Amino acid sequence: MNSFLTLRRVVGVLFVLTCLISRSQQILECSDNPLLFFDPINKEFSCIDDSTLVHFYSFKSKTWHKKNLKFYSSDSISKFKREFIPITTSKEVFFVHCSGGEVYHYKNGIIRRIDRSFKHRNKYGSALFSLENQIFQFAGYGLFRTNNTLLKFNYLTKEWIEIGNKGEMPEPRCDFPFYIQKKKLYILGGFYIEGEKTKKMKDAWFFDFLTQKWKYCGEINPFLVSNLLKGRGTLSQIHEYSPIGNYYFSFNFETNTFSAFQNIFDNQNARTIVEPTGKLALVWLASSGNQKFTLQVLPVNQLLRNKVYSGPIFVDKVQSSPRLYWLVGVGCFILVVVLIFFLNKKFNKNLNLNVPTEMLTEKERQILELFLANQDRRLELTRLNAFVDEDGISIDTLKKRREVLLKELRQKLTLVSGLSADEIFIMHQHPLDRRLKIIELNPKFQVGE
Image (cartoon, rainbow, N blue to C red; front, side, top):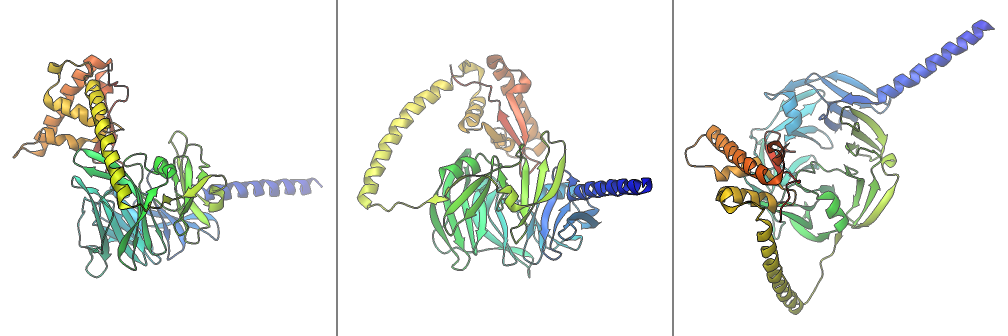
């Protein structure tokens, strides 16, 4: 009898251990920036986190496994993870540089470059996607301007070619949500950059790959504007059921409807990849303190348990008579003139900043106004090069002059703000290219009387 009880205890312990081991195998620890994709050949979720191994999730055993990785690139794996975006077609996996140009192919644990191009450096924040086993890239930012070109990677020449457009098309933009449904590319808003100005765009368009034409859909639902277009660089690559802030979003462009579901993860720092059948999602999740990062596979319906909002994606264009347009135009013009008059008075008053006129140079005052012109008070550090650039000077000299200019402005603002010199400006890494810096004027720096 005792031996029988002992045997039962052993079996019970083994069962508990088996459950714990099984549970631990379903969750994989990873870094803060792994390469995640669905492998269409082996039909498995995959994760590349270093240059030696590929971790893959077996749908049959519901556990993680690993195999050797052969990584052929002159870039380090850490740089590769930062700069390349996985693109999965129905047959293959590719890695494309986030600024356009360079293309790598992945198959059975081997990554190898296949293009004859170069880093374009003008497609940051673009729509990078696949359709019918082809790779496309639309719009983006780089080389000091946004663009609206649509490119396609040619497998024969190993180069990118531009797809022509028949008729009206959307304005240049970057950092916008995009979706592929029924052989159409849908884009929602984004940001247009011209010189020192950044404009938030609220229009919706789609490109029909059958007719090779763009069509305007209308203005985006205000709920989507407030949640999807919070600021430049807040979006990277958008997929179905991507968690954005407080919500998961699901879109049906054929019926012009969307649904927002409550983000089930408290810290909201998560991203997902959904396999082609739409039943399972690979979820990358950070701990509340961003100290630990894990991967796990969950049913999609578990992510979409609590719907909190639904409505139209965009509002149709209003058809009006030419006379009504003329009247509205005149009314708007008068309103704009009045607003400009009052806002100009208020803005000029606020820009007194309690700083004596002789304290700031003309360059320093222009830089300060440049920060205040942006709602988030942020600028790319390279935007300040125009204030110190001269023909013939080296990059090192330009950087030193820029540092001196910022240092002098920082010291002067310290005298009138009550903040320390270290608090005046806050430095951030660019969300798309970590070699670039974003500089922010501290929100505590008050403008006004």
